[in-house]
Image 1 (cartoon, rainbow, N blue to C red):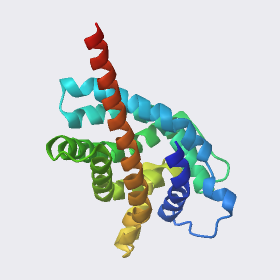
Image 2 (cartoon, rainbow, N blue to C red; image 1 turned 90 degrees about the vertical axis):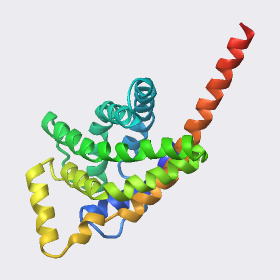
Image 3 (tube, rainbow, N blue to C red; image 1 turned 180 degrees about the vertical axis):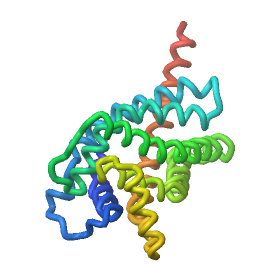
Length: 224
């Protein structure tokens, strides 16, 4: 959670770059919507890793990651919509079930391909190449972030444009057709930095927690 808080201004800058709202921000507005981020950080991560670890023994790691992201997205989406609209300074935030459904679809459109890249790559680097969890997580996260970034732009635009999916795709297509293809990589540096640092911390903590639980389990079995 402390990492989310420290890196949050980068997330705000990414959102504003992706929505073409680049102007000076007061210090308070760099943290617009941060309460939503903090509220969803722990529950969504807990739901994902519990689902991921539960499914992994019975299915391919990529599929386990997809199932985990699909369920965690149900927790994450409502607050993510509010957070991004506050970051983009959307006035009079409207919030309804249709928008949540469209936001959830946009979230899965980004997170499923991301998970299909990140978690198999993490397991390969950690289990096969024997890299530390923190290093494996950072490399896997940065790789997945670079390859899926255009989908992150689409997700952001859908969430801040009242969830109007066809309109969002039309606006983006018009930008690309007019030679503004750079819109699809807007905010890439900020996202790569966030996910690289976040992956290093999260997977490092994840690996440490697994090792500690395994050690405690072995001690319990030895005693009994």
